[in-house]
Image 1: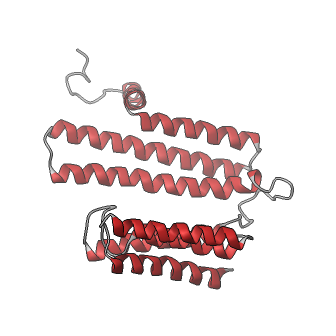
Image 2: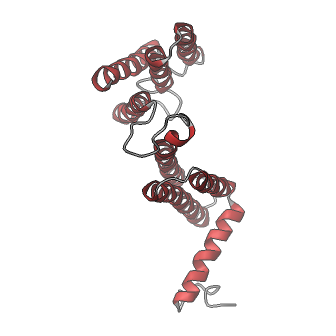
Image 3: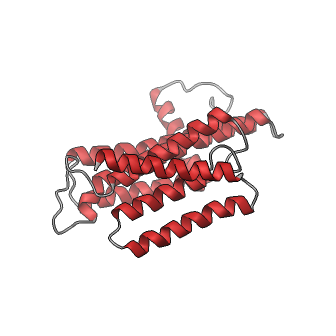
Length: 239
């Protein structure tokens, strides 16, 4: 049995490097989500090379991909330690795993936004784009409004501490997000019909939360109001 097999620390930098590589390979072999992130990173690097992005843009894309993979590796490490400590259900063990998974989610959302900021000028308006971070990409205001709505939902649910995640609480997050998207569609879409269709969809989402008895009418109404008001104010201030 090797020294590492007996639980001792690596005795050289080379052995430490081997430990790190073994850890990455074990995680990639054991966790499919890490494999997904590696595939996504591969796609991002390919797109960066294909569109010949600037050095700064390439650095930011690689950094975002590395941060997502790092967060997923830490999530895997925490889950492994929790499973080592106990194989029975414990509320704190669940919290540890959920918070670690939340770190991956937050990092992934940030990476997606950064990827959009960098690549949107290269992918969407190919005929007249100026692919630099200095140019405002399309859809910044709707996306920014939606992000503010999501952050406010998290803060309000943490403040009122009612219900369980994705099931109840003040306000209805589903209604807030749905109406934020509907308002942005009305304001930015060229077709009134499309705006009406999205609004109907938002109303149906709110109704579904009532039919499933996940939210009260007050929670759904305040969620819809939150999404509508924040999105409207963001449009009025920043457009």
